[in-house]
Amino acid sequence: MLVLGDVHASEPANRETLLNLYEAVDPDAVLQVGDLEYYDLPAPTWFVAGNNEELDVIDALRAGRGPPATRNAHLLASTAATVDGLCVAGLSGNYAPTQFDRPRRDLEGGRRRHFTREDVERAADLRDVDVVLTHEAPRGLLSYGYDPGCEHVNALLETLSPALCLVGHHHRHREAELAGTRVVSLAPVWEGYYTLDVETLTLESHEVADE
Image 1 (spheres, rainbow, N blue to C red):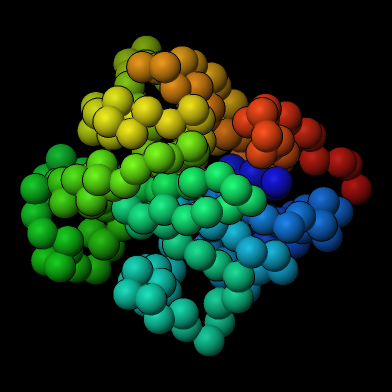
Image 2: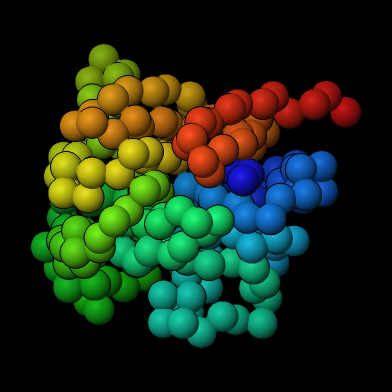
């Protein structure tokens, strides 16, 4: 299974890299952790929305209405799907303290990019989850002289107890074990990609080949 970090495919060079990876790996299934910004994909891809997305497209996917410009793009927004025998769940969006307690239906404009308490609670009701995708990191994974993580993601992992959590947003590879879950912050696609063994949940990193 192909696993991808942030893409930012609104940049033509990043979109080209993305499509080249699909062609080179020829995956049956793909997991991606947000800031995708391109939804016409060559293979079935399950992803969470990041803070940089086409939000009208994301809203349509949340509502189960795939716009004409989408293909193979499956949004995980406090939902789960069976992917190659794994139960994969996703929490879409990033955290904003001022928006967290608002109903999702009241989020407007760019604020639609955030997750809310109701989103976290819906995700926490999922069961038998093997892998969780988040754009926002939990606390205890990264440090910039301060911890940029979100305690609500930690609480979700403690509730769901997945074997693996894959994280975007920070554009760097970091790993930690938190509450019994292996948590991995993924490098962006212009630096590399990952493959996941669905039997062992072994995640292997690969550098992007020089042109």
